[in-house]
Image (cartoon, rainbow, N blue to C red; front, side, top):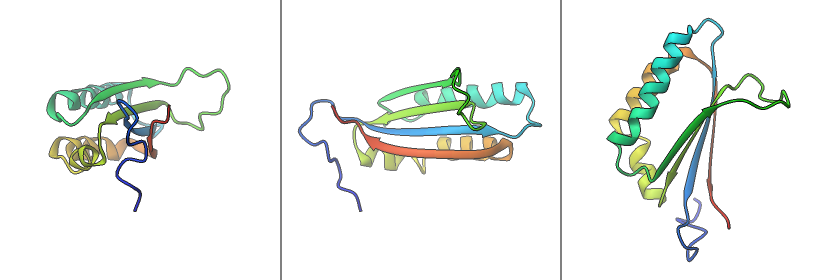
Length: 113
């Protein structure tokens, strides 16, 4: 079990939850747009989210391996993240996007300054 906050004492330390999405080739653009809208609505429904950003791949390196969308959700504590993960609105997002996902990668880390 990782420590609660290994950056304890650093002002404004944040826990980042990064998610990369790869969609199935047959997923129509309008479904991806609906997924994006649902994703963005989470900030108004889950108060534990401290910061939220997302975007699509624009890299010129060609190393995205089919991942097209990136989500970064920031939390002030592991406890806040632990409220977010099983939250009914987050679970609903997972359920609606799951049939369209080819692959998913998640990565959590404490920001180190």
